[in-house]
Image (cartoon, rainbow, N blue to C red; front, top):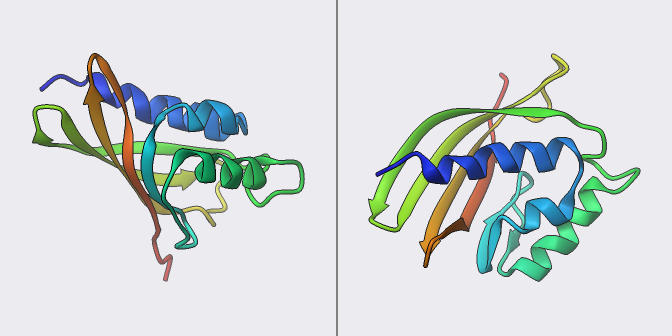
Length: 125
């Protein structure tokens, strides 16, 4: 198992911090599933893109929010499937975005993309 799929985490962080919904969406397979920070379930890439565009748009809840993802674990599940676990923290010191991001990456042919993802809030109390 190589660290190759870890590039997805860095690209995800960059897309988040530049509010680039299209770049973030390109990291996912068409048949992806994602549970966002507020618990909403999306079951395909086009639905996910609509939600990503909404949250990153001017005035959206994530517009101009900057986060960092601290890699905590990579768990091989199969030769072409790994789970990437990261801690999400807001960069400005105020931490309304503290969470755990779990990305299940799948390799198809020679390309790694996200097949499943979940962003779970972490209580600060």
